[in-house]
Structures are given as C-alpha cells and as structure tokens.
Image (cartoon, rainbow, N blue to C red):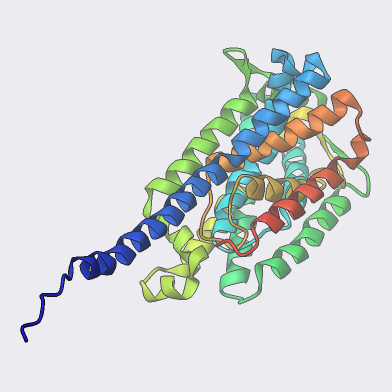
Length: 351
C-alpha cells in the first residue's frame, strides 16, 4: 500500500527552535555582563555622588566652594602618588614604601635647600634646585625598586617592605629624631607652590589634573601602557610576545617614584618641615585610591580616571568625618582599611 507522505515541517521547526532559543539565552548573559561592566566602571563616580549628597545633608558647609577646593587641594598629594601606584598595581606589583619615600625625599630637599640657601642666598634658583632634587630622588628610588624586583628576583612586597623601614629610618637619622625645618626666607619664597592659585584653583589641583591626564594618555594611548596591562594579565604570555618585561617593570617603578617626587615637592611648602611622621600611611591611602577606583588587585586592568575619583572619594569621606564628627577623626585610617577590605572582597576572582 502507498504510504502517506510525512509532514516534516514540525520536525524542522522543532530542530530550529532549540537553536533559536539557545541564541536568545546566550545573548542575554552577554548583555547583562556588558551592563554590569558599565555599572562597575561607574561605581566610584556613583559612590562619590552619593557621598557628596550625604555630606551636604549632614552639614551645609560641605557643599561650599571653599570646602570643595580644600578637599581637592588635600587630595593632590595622594592623587598624584595614586596615579603612579595605578601603573604598578596594573602590572601586577605593589609598593608599600611610598609614604616613607616621600618623607625621606622631603627631608633631603629641605637639607639641600638650606645648604644651597646658606651659600647662594634665598632665591628662585634654590627653590628650583629643591624641586629637581625631589624628582631625581624619586626616580632613583623607583629605579632601585625596579632593579631589585627584576634583576634581584625579589617579590615587590618584600622589596618595598624593606625600603619602607630604610627610608624612614634614614630620615629619622638625618633629623636626629626630631624635624628638619626649611629656612624661613626659603619657606616664604617656596610657599606659593602650595598656597598659590591660578584662575581661583590652587596649584596642586592643576598639577594633579596634569599628572592624571598624562597618566591616562600613557596607559591607554602608548605601547608602554599596553605592555603594562599585558604583563599584569599574564606575564609569561607577555614574554612570549617579545615584551621586554624587566624594562617595563623598571620603568613602571621609576614612574611611581617620579610621582612621589612630584607630590613631595608640593608637600614641602605646605609645612616647611619633615619629621619621622611625614607621609605616614600614605601608602595605605594610595593603594586604597587605586582599588576603590576599580583597578583589579590581580593586575591587568585599571583606570587612571577611576583612581583619581577614588582618591577624591577617600578625601571626601575624611572631610565628612571632620565636619560632622560622626566618628572620631582618629579612625580615618580604620575607615580606609575597611574600604580596602570591602573592595577586595567584591573584586575576588576578578582579573
């Protein structure tokens, strides 16, 4: 008997249905991942906005122009160091010595300026010499870190933990346990570097902006910046790709040292002195700024703009605590420590 033709249209539809459904289900996680990535990138900015709103509600003086400029001015030191720290952490490294390094550089700058002022007289040339010394010492200390880490094959944590004690001990030795103070005439001549302003904005804020723009350009628009990210993502693969890993790491630590030098030459005219407590816990604030700004602790990814926002966010927290007395100002470092732990917990497994 002739068989009736079988209608395969249903079978075809059934065959195609899972593929179509599968495509829809696979695209949904992709969109969700992309949305989460955008929200994660905006996280520091949203956090800063919410903090500013809360600060304004708690104390109307928070939203004044003077207070805003004060917060930005005080952020400049840590923000500049954090830009350099961002490069180091993206490359998979760490530097625990930046606060002690800044203290020693400040002490050396004061000693050099006092000695030069005694022989040459207080003049702009002496101030320029002090600034040059700050930059040179920062680059040299960074070079020493890079060489010990790359050529000495010592972990960055160990190297910088050791130099943390060395730098501060030498400052204490030079200051004989007290403080090194800049000569009054030189202090008056140098003070506009910190207290002066351009278009109503303090000079340190302009310097922070310039360093951030330069750092963002280097990280995102140069081959060196791509190498830094590649090394942080997978150092072995970067070596296979013919990247000179040692040279890039040395340059990265020198860049951080240079940022510490810039921050120090802005800090010296603020107080005109350096003591064993100068720069205390700056490394904590710099690292906190970087990771709050969204940089992956395991390296490979990060943002200069996010780092600057993170530095401002931490300064805003301290400012709010000072204005409102919600908790003791002596607990500012504890708040920053909690922030580091919380962000590290949220970043676990991220690379």
